[in-house]
Length: 252
Image 1 (cartoon, rainbow, N blue to C red):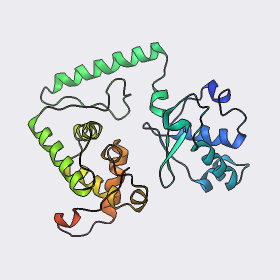
Image 2: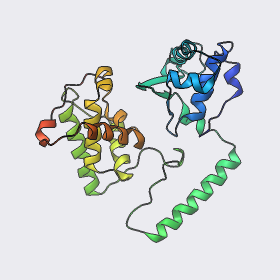
Image 3: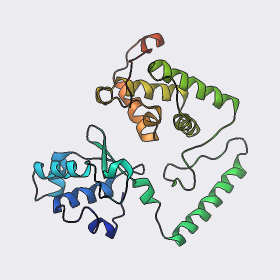
Image 4: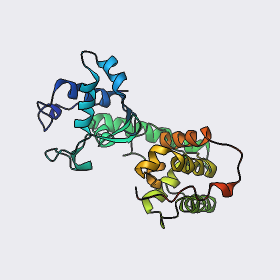
């Protein structure tokens, strides 16, 4: 992976913050995934970056996850990183910055992708082509509508299961519904999404943080697979009714 490091990084509100902070920030930008998530472990970073101690790395993480009223970005109150799980962080605005490219490159990319889509459409008129995981969102937004009756039924099934699992949540907003549509369009089944909801609801860290929003659980394919894995690790023979409700979750 790679990340873009803009000159404004060194002239903005981070100016003079310290070498170890810039080192951790550059590492996060270079190793984040396409959705902006990166794993940052203090002991691991000490070995990777060198010439520092654990306290330096922790100080950098504290700085990067603290609100910055002087930041050029108001998102997440100016934070550069948001902790999303044990060792898991999200780079704020990562997806937006990744979209910034030279206009010529963007034009060439769009032309090539449209040509590939037309070629796939010729092969199959029954199933619309799905965007590859690395396609930028300016081409294929994370809102993939599918008007088919079966897809609508699947959407209703997942939403009903989610609300049954989290009875304190009375409704699912449109963002959450779009996430369900998108994940279904990508090939996840109803059972997959229900298992992801179970995995999130059972995970102690997410229970403690109250992070159970449907748009959060189904944010991207990697998170869905991660929550499915968490559920499968604790899976044992049980009836479906034993899973409902899993907990009375608080607000995210």
